Length: 184
Image (cartoon, rainbow, N blue to C red):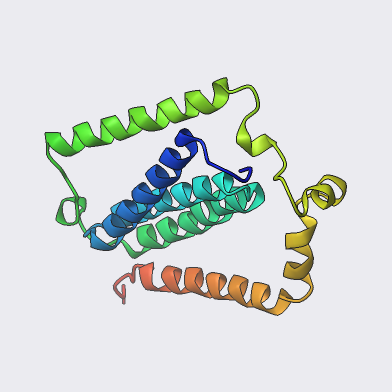
């Protein structure tokens, strides 16, 4: 955002997404069901991505959605399903009518935000940030400053993380594998 006073809508949405992220994170750690907890974590990730976009870090916001809310959460849900934690009614997070109304109001609010962004003449995520770095981003793009160090200086950490994720999936498969009784 430009220097000076911020528009009221910007401030409102910044606090709105921030509060939803904090509430979603609290709901994530208090759920009994691992699937419900994983979905609350996805909601937290989306709200953090919205905050990144509002702070003119569009690439980080996109990576937040693609990598964390997308790929890693798919791995988490895959591991949860492989572990087969029992009958769904034992770990269900069923709520009453009040929670369904709150969820519906939340969905309508998100839909209104999407419509407001799409009706704007130039969405904020399509404009380059003002100030330092805008000229370099226009010339070189926004990916090179992130991808360069990731695949040069931090390559070992990047590969170690991928091996750790692979080991966790293999471990979940081994734990989730059903053992058949001996036939002999």
